[in-house]
Length: 496
Image (cartoon, rainbow, N blue to C red; front, side, top):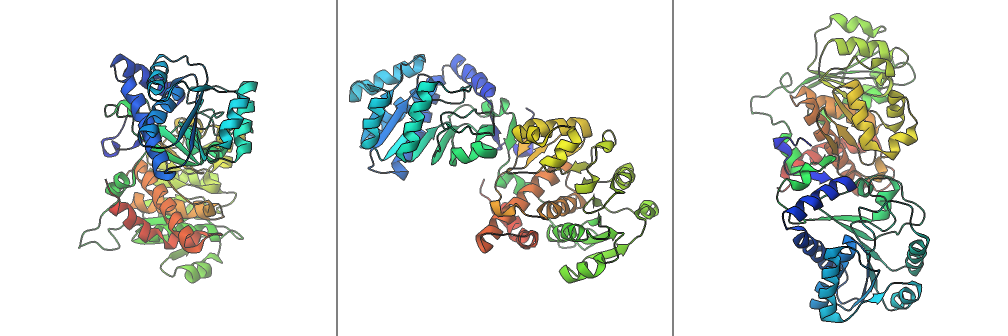
C-alpha cells in the first residue's frame, strides 16, 4: 500500500494474508519470538489493569495464539495474579518454547477438554481466549465448537487474543457459535472483522497493541489504513486574519424537488457548519425557501424550475448535488461533472449511467444500497466486504468513494481508508445529506478530494459522538451539525 506522507501514523488494517507475510518477515529477521513476547505482555497488562487480583483462566490453542497465551500466563504469574491454564496439543515451534517456559514456573498445563474446562470455569473470574487467531478458516471443528459453547454458557468475561475464537478475520459476519468477547486485544493493527458488522460486535472493546516491529512493516502489509485524529487535524484548513466570506469557499447545493426539500437544506447546514463562506441552494421546489430560512437564514436559495439553466451561471468553488433531486438527477449530474469542479455526488445523483463520466475531483458518497445499484450487485455483497466494494466503486467510477456505514470506508486512487468513531444514534435520516455538505465545504476551502473525504467523514463521526453524549438516544442530523465546530476543535487538539 502507498502511504501518503501526511498519514504515516495511520493504523494499518491487516488481513490474514498480510499477517502471514509480516510474520514471515519477522521470522527472517529473527524477531518473531520478540513479537510473541510483546503480544503476551500486552494481554497480561490488560488483564492486570482490568481484573487485578482476579482468578484468570487462560486457554491456549495449538498455534501462535497459544504461544501468546503461554507468555501472558507466565507474566500474570510473575505479577502475582492467580492463574490456571488449559492447552491443546502444540504445533507451533515458538508456542512449544513458550509452553516450556511456562512449565518451568508453574508445572505442566492441563489438557483442554470438556471436563477440565468445566472444572476450571467454576474457579475462574475471567477467561483469556488464545485458542484461534487471525489464521483461522471456518468452519469450527465440532469438538472446539462444543468447548466454546461451554464458555458462552459460563457467562465469564472473555479477553480474546487477536479476535474471539470462531471469527474469520476477514469477514464482518459473526457465526452463531462464536464467542462474545468483553475485550479483544489485537496487534499491529485491526482486522476487518474487528471493524465491520456483527463480527465487530462479537469482538467487544478493541485494544490495538504494538508488536514492537520496525516502523512501516505493518503498514506495508495493510489492506487499508485508519488515520489518526491528529493527522486529520493537521489537514484541516486554517483561516488567516484577512479571510472573508469570498475566500472561505463558495458552495452550491443542488437538490430538492417538490415533496423532498429537507435533504438539501441539511446539506447546506452541514456546509455552513464546516466553514463554507457562502452556501447557495439551487432547487426546483419553491417550498424549499421558507424551510431553509427557518432552519438556517444564512443559506441563500435560488428557485430554478429547470436547473439546467445553471449551465451559464458563474461557477462555485465546490458543489454538492443529488439530495432529493428527483428524476432529472442523472442528467443534471452529467452536466455538473462536465464542469470539472470539485463535486460531491449523493443520493439521487448516484446512478450507474454515470460510470465513465467521473473525474479526479469528484467524491461519490453511496450507502450500501446505493453502492449495490452502482455495482449491479446485491446489497448483501457490499455489506459482506465493504473494503472490496469501495475499491471496485473507485475503479469503476473514478475520483474518491465514501462508502457510508458503520464504519465508513473511503477509497482513493491508490489506497483505502477506514474511518474511526461515530455513534449508533447516527442511524437516522438526513445524516448522509449533512455529510455531503461537510465534504463540499472542505473541497471549497481547498482540500483535495481525498483530504476532504477523510476529514469530512471523521468530523461528521466526531460530531455524532458529541451529539450522542449530549442527547443520548434518537439523534437527528441537525444535532450532529450543531456539534461540528466542537468536533473541529477536537481534531485540532488531538495528541500526536
